[in-house]
Structures are given as C-alpha cells and as structure tokens.
Image (cartoon, rainbow over all chains, first blue to last red; front, side, top):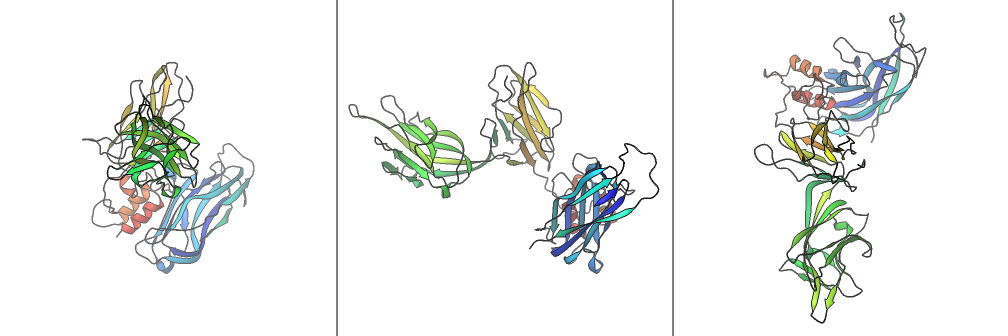
Length: 162
Length: 320
C-alpha cells in the first residue's frame, strides 16, 4: 500500500474460514522508523474492535499496548468475556491505527499469533503480513503537523487452515 | 590466551534448606555442546543383543565378552531401541586382567571397525566409565566392543571384559531447565589455562541479552543467585585473564523457575468479584514484561514474564 508521510491508516485484521474462535493473542511488528502506532490518552494503542467476536451482543475485551511502551511491537489480546459461544465463519477482528512518520518501505507482520477456543486451546491458523510504502520528504524533526491528514485503510485477512 | 576456552558450566538446584534438589544439570562447552537434563535410561547388559563369544550371566546380571583372534565381540542396541538421539553414555564395567593388560571398551555406530571412543577398563571391580556424548546417526545401531583380546597359553593369563549395564543420559542443546526454589547455583569447571584471572557471569531475562557481568575470582567454580518464582533466567559464563582478555561466552543456560502455587484469580483486589476495577487493573498491565514497572506478577497467569493475550484469555475466563 502506498502512503504519504503523515498519513494515518487503519490496519484492519479480518478472519475467514474460522471454526471455533473464542479469542486471539498476537503481536504486531512494524518498522518504527516508518510507522507509529497511534496511542490514546491512556497510553494504549488506538484500536477498534471488529464485529466477528461480538456477534449476538457478546461482550468482548480488546487490549493493544506497545510492549513495555516501546515502539515496534504491539501486544494484542482480543477475546469474548465469560462463556459465550465460539464464533465461526468470517468477519473483522480489530483495527489498529498507524501514522506514517518516516519515508521508506516496510512490513507490518504478526508474531506469536494464535487463535484460541473456549478451552484456551490453540487452533491452527495462518497469518499474512502487509507491506507499506511511505513516500514524501523525510524530515528529521517537525514542529508543525500538517493540517490535512488523510486516513486510509489497509486490509489484512486471516486464513484459518483446515 | 585463546579466545575459545574449554570449560563447562553447570546449573544445579541445591539441596538443603535453601533449594530443592532438581535434576543433575550440566552443560559442557568443550566442542560437543550438550546439556544433561537428568533424564536417563539404564539398559542392563543381559538384555542387550550380542555377537558370538559372549556369555550372559543372568543371575549375576552381567555379560562377559571374551574375544577371539580376528573376531570382535560386542553388545549392541538397534537404532529403534536407543532411548535418545543424543545422549551421554556411561557404562558400568569391570575388567579381567592378565600379564598387566586390561580390556578395552570401544563404542561405534553401525560399523564395528569405525571406533568413536575407546577406553581401558582398568579395574576388576565394577566402575562407571563415561564414554562421552554422542549423537546417533539416523538408523544406526550402537555397539559396545571388546577390542583387545589377549590370552597367554603359557600362564593362561586371559583378558576379558564384563559389562553390567549402560546408562543413557539424555543430552540436548538448548535444554530449558525447569527448577524450583528461590535460589539457584550456577557452576562451572575451571579453565585449564594458567593465566586465568577470574570468571564473568552473565545473567539476563531474555536470550543473549545480559546485564553487567558479575566478576568472581579464579578460584570460584560456582555462584549463587536469588531468583524470582515464575521467571525465566538466561546465564552464560566467560573466563578472563590478567590482561583482561575474555574468552567466548559459554553456551547459554536457561532456567525456568517454577511459579508459586497461586490460585488463578481475576479478583485482584480480593473484594469477592471480578469487576471494572479488576479489568482496569489487568488492562494497565497489558503488554508489559517483567522488566517493566507496569508489570504485575498477579496478572501474568502463565508466568512467562509477559502479560499478553494468553493472560487476557485466562483473566477473562476467571472473571466471574
């Protein structure tokens, strides 16, 4: 995906061919010299839940934090609360907001990513990565942030094996 | 001083008041890298397969190997029966000497002419002979061979070999040592070089990432560490000389200290319910590792030194 410096975009994680999903645990690795995970006031990474796990008004819990508050690795936890039935099929899991802070090319990829059923047993899964290309003039430091920021979306699909 | 040194490090959990005895844990750094986990299998000689010219003494629990000219006698274990792919082999054997000669015991895989290790069994009493660490080639049988038959018809001096049992000790690189207790002892063999001034012990909570080393004297062979329950520690040792030249680090030893016996509870404030307070408490620890100020031990349910999605799953499951 081609982006411009200072663009913000949602990194959207989707799932398909799922059978028994109670929750997921993963790490998202990104190049911190190019991208910045946008934080909210609490210091956690700005994320929004998808609809896949919250079907039938199921309460979910979504956490995304930079590991030890250092850039480059986001720890993500998303699961249903309580004993809600597992989800199956396809849908959106969660979105993560990134900002382009440097010129260059890099990958956003998953690490230690697992899908779990209600017994917290891992289900086989295959996770794909995404490439981003940020263009623009690489400014070492800025005092003024451009007024117009365009937000774009990048989709990543999770394919469940079997 | 050469950059590569030959010495070994041992991680042991001590007995007594402080620590609980764990497995015998050893990691050698002398080329054949291995770690002893303490898992061992003893194979009595009387159940091993053998060549001709061998007498099996079932009642006395040993096998006598008496060689014939141009024909080796041996015990062997087929590949399918080897308990470990990589192992240390200790053979309990005794020798019958004659004319001041003692029997030799050799080890080979598949081909009895290709000897990998040969020792002299120089005692008439049973002793344990450490043949070393071996990786069994795929599909290879292991042979214990009597290689130096001797018989003097003049005085009937006869050299024979008696084998009682073979002990296979699992050996694998990068073994994770699971230990109990709040202190553990890291030990090493002294370097053989004369200009050693001391040893530097490196410790960290991540593989290959160590803090400032602890320097100990050249006479030291161990160091005691206070450890926290549930944490995983990474150790390495190096020797240094009087000119401050340092040897290569020993292979890393990893010790997983078992966590305390805690009841999994998401009720962090013990008010009888898992509510918004507990959710907030957990959330505020999320993404932290045990090196971080945000880390809270009680929220690290699986005691892996990080609070992540798996802990969240456990937290949610227990949040009732």
